[in-house]
Amino acid sequence: MVKHELKKITHYEYWEFWVFYIPMIPVWLYHSLKAKSLTYFTATNPGIEHGGFFEYSKFKIQEQIAEKSRPVHQLITSENNSLDLGFNYPFIAKPEKGQRGISVQIINSDREWEIYKRNAKGNIIVQEYIDLPKEYGVFYAKLPYESKGKILSITGKEFLTYQGDGTTSLREFIESNSRAYFNKSYLYMKFHEEQNLILPAGEKMILERIGNHHRGTYFYDNSSLITPALEAAIENIASNVEGFYYGRLDVKAKSDEAFRKGEFIVLEINGANSEATHIYDEEYSIIDAYKEVVRHLDVQYKIAKHNIKNGAKTTPIGEFSNIVFKHL
Image 1 (cartoon, rainbow, N blue to C red):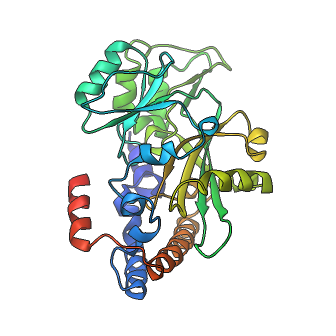
Image 2: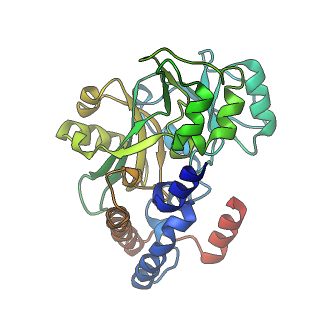
């Protein structure tokens, strides 16, 4: 529909990732000049491959989180591809070295699991599905010379939901809602038998339970939830991950109040490639969004520069270029 296509042009939230970040190239070059390295950011997290920018094992990071604070999980490889998790469907399957939510899937049956394994490239992380209603992205940073870090921002997430009015069908909702429309091929396939469903007024149906921006999830700034108790809980998690200074923790909690108390489960931790996803709040202008990106990148540079000074190695530009080419 024309209005959706126009929105894709006028709203940066719907731009391609690389298009939005083109204006950040001068920031990267400026930091590179000061750090004397084009890949300075790969020293941001010395304990993670390439600083957690590309091609790093999320399973290795997850293993360093206390069992009480993470889902039950297993790494599936070509040598070890049998499930031994102690729970039933549904569960989450995702690439060990995935990016931006690509190929993350809720598995509901033996058939879906066999199809997923057949199409997967590389190792797979299988983890327990955490059925909690609230999901957040917590952006953490710690300067290496400081005793503890801080939360730079928090992203709240609202899953793509079809709310009934007694007259609008699911298909009509998908056609009329921008977030659903841009994922319509996926949603039509997923709900091929329910497209003519009409929910009574007030009833809701969550269409996508993967809290990813590109699956229609609405991201908003929820930084007002930061409390000393939450910061202490995040610090406890982050300080146990070797060489981790900068990144985003994706977590789930029972409620905002439980989250503020530091009660949550960590779904995964992202490294130097972490995006400050609260910038997709509809209340933000594009200027506000870029200011936030620069603020986070400035912190990243300070951390990386200090780590380099302390002997941390950066990924050589040739090697990094090969990794980027492989990823793309």
